[in-house]
Image 1 (cartoon, rainbow, N blue to C red):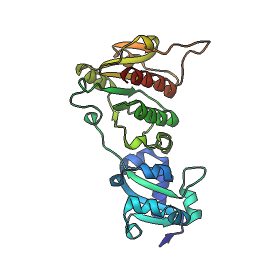
Image 2: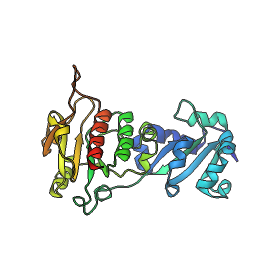
Image 3: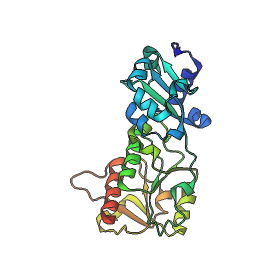
Image 4: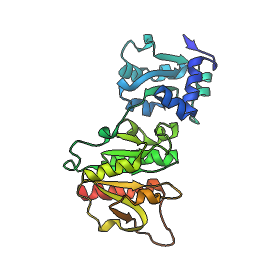
Length: 268
């Protein structure tokens, strides 16, 4: 059976999930769209799959690999008319495949090993980041640079915002992320575990003069205002990226990339 009406309740639910973080949290679901991202999904995390009529033919091999040979008879697999599928897509050029994914319920232990000092932990701590593209890029960068986990304040952009998810290019499935409702508490916990806390700050010392070959974490602040005074005060040391010209700072995602790859360079 092909879904041909945009008023179908399941499709209306997809639109709600796309637009509302509250809806995503209540349903513990989020949306992944496009074949490239679909190939990255851990199969056990898939709640349901929606394909356009064209996509059903085009992606038959991928669907079989991901869902099994009998995928067409599964009760979590739906075919949608091309026109109606376009109406539920959140992308400018719909690719014809979309999945609802179960959210991971991470706590601090998912981000931290029991032996975080011995394991040379490398943690990003993000405060009040608001731009979805920045967060997605940071998550993708984190995987590439070998970050062991991310802690993000609950007043930041939703990690399951569709724009965040797309920007991660699949890293959302692999990088442990913990959403903290008390960032100060969790930073203090890290310090008790002998994890050095560095704060990215305009008043910091040159990042290239520091040694990051031990368990460490990095505070990354809001795009416009940087770190709050309260959070920056928790840092063991403040660091900065040296700048030429009249540039005072880089954007959050770029700064994170520079810091993360300096840590990776030192540890290679």
